[in-house]
Length: 280
Ligand code: SF4
Image (cartoon, rainbow, N blue to C red; front, side, top):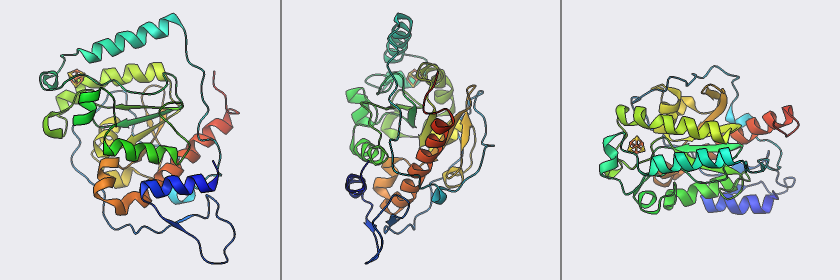
């Protein structure tokens, strides 16, 4: 992605870039975010765990070291056109749409499975559908969704081509309250099936609820950022950042979210370079 377009995307997110007069041309590695970072991360006790989740043990790296070279953020994988895959997706979609495994089914409009190519290297996971998502049947379509799209575009990702977006919970909790442990426990098997079909190379957990539930921890979000965690039986690398709804309320932390995105991109690029950009 050229730097001018990246600058435009970052401006859309609300992050201003500046360079000193007489400085060399701007590169991704030298870009400086002028937005001050003052607010802390949200934190609260975890609500549930996933038996197959693996706690973070991996290579540690700081987000600020991770300004990777500008380049394609993701390999676009060919769709799995097999009849078997199509049938599994349709079964999953139908089950979620009509699911009654937990009490949330009685207050939602519809279960919301996710959006994006059905084989994606990137999987973004949020908390649960909000009011607009519940109505339209697609995750992240309100103001927070627009910010998420802008954030993803800044690293070359687009829900139409190379990133799948889903939530931990498939049904909206009333008044957007935090999910209850039993609701998360009832719903997580759907996400596990989704991940088995998608086979993502990297996961980006947005927000405290998603991160803590996926990792089975009550560690504050601020301490989960800036390092690689691993999720599930496939040990998929997982990076944590802020939820866009939080960033709308706390724009001072957009700079930190941008560092997280650069870090995630660098992790992905290392993964693909290690396998020459291809997967079996
Ligand atoms: S939140 Fe999940 S488990 Fe609960 S009704 Fe919705 S789809 Fe089913």
